[in-house]
Length: 344
Image (cartoon, rainbow, N blue to C red; front, side, top):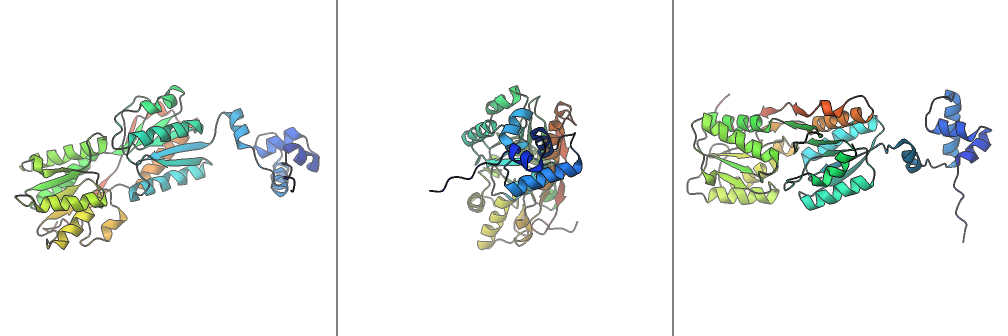
């Protein structure tokens, strides 16, 4: 049985280059007091000799892991994929690593994710909460130890944790108002549980737009589900079985809206002539379904970049996170053929 190869140490590198171990250590850690050419030679020799930088030991000395934890509800979401891409871009540029996990829309899994992040000594957290997260007790260990947390999209009001989101109420108002201005008199709203700020605020915006357009809300106009593909199919079935067929649908996400359209078209309904449809998020699939889907656009990569930039700015002592409690990002109503009954 072959003996395992001896692990290369800074002393081996120092011996080879006829330098002190302290100089090699400073060169590897990019510390001051080492000439640029010496540092380059140290790094080149370390790579040639197969030296493995002991990041964990370095972390213990600096009390920094240069790692950010990211917890999202689902990874199989176009919006969250864009958010993560934005976070990763900023983190890579700043030489930070990411640990990414998903809560699968449950508080139980989110608690487990938070504990894993804590055990891995992340420097900070970027979190979008699960549907049923009604408290943030599982993040208290981070808050007590001044490990910064930023909530994005699905947020939680806490004096120590900034929030990054859009004005969901205003965006939902604009969608519903658009449908009303297109002649819709009976507009269904498909949404998820109201525990999270996102869906409660979108519902409130929808209600206000109905009121301002002289339209009446009744309980049968509200469909609550998990906004999935299957939920969209089932919602279409519920809509077609209503005593009085609605003439407008506002879904709180695009996936559900798109599958409503597909199911309604299978049953012979014309979109938007019989029923106008709008979604939320501007997923890529909005441009695939026929007719193309009216929606609210707010860029996930912008959310990710802003969130990561704020967190890293704080971690590198360039910004006091307490000074920024909430950032409201821009959104835009994108009108497409799924809701256009009149020229605008």
